[in-house]
Length: 68
Image 1 (spheres, rainbow, N blue to C red):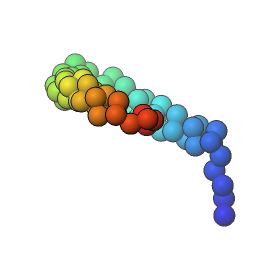
Image 2 (image 1 turned 120 degrees about the vertical axis):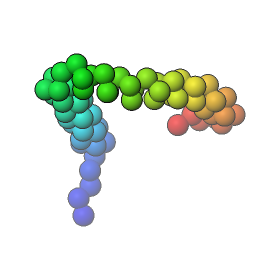
Image 3 (image 1 turned 90 degrees about the vertical axis):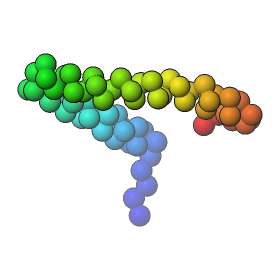
Image 4 (image 1 turned 45 degrees about the horizontal axis):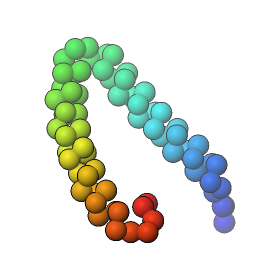
């Protein structure tokens, strides 16, 4: 059984985030302005959903002793 330590998990998570960011940046660079417009059209509603749901999450999580 292989035990993965906290530091290794953190490194793998950071690597996944970096690769995801790099792939999106590369796709926008190759696709040009048209790809950027499509990406922004998808991203804008997602930002509104996140900012709209954060206060709801904060109110519900405020009842707990530990916010996860």
